[in-house]
Amino acid sequence: IAGILGLELFKVDLSQIVDKYIGETEKRLEEVFSKAEQSNMILFFDEADFFLGKRITSVSISGDQAINSLRSQMLILLETFDITVIFATNLNENYDKAFDSRILCSIKFELPDRELRKQSIAKMIPSKAPINREILTDELLYKLSDLTEGFSHRELKNVALMVLTECCKKDSQITEE
Image (cartoon, rainbow, N blue to C red; front, side, top):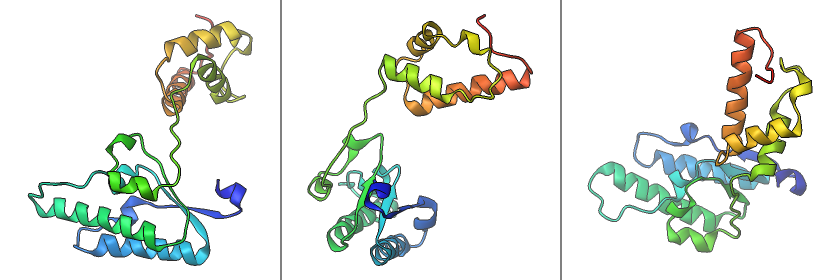
């Protein structure tokens, strides 16, 4: 999206925002929004449910109050600053309803189907990997695709990396067996 718009993408690192002192997290968050607006950047929040989750209704400890304050601050910042913000999460059902009117568009990515898993697995195998290339037939790739039903692209990548790592440790090639 940033590339298409010709803008820089700024990935917000939660560890650089969250602070143990009351009010500091909100202050840092506002600074990030301000910098993004001044520099005409797109903000990207991964694991955004931290910021957009439902506010806690029965506040019992100061930590709950801090979370509510942070989420309220995010609502205000989204209204105040004229910037594009992208949120990514696996838990969008946990969003506070107050964010619905502030988020222009939501795109849900489904888990890859059999064909897409096959294509992903094929692309994730580096050309220099210790694999007998003759065995990488459509039939084998579909078998692997079937074994990984319900896997996300990240999980497919992790499985591919684990298998390749094990082969490298054993200094062997992946074969049909």
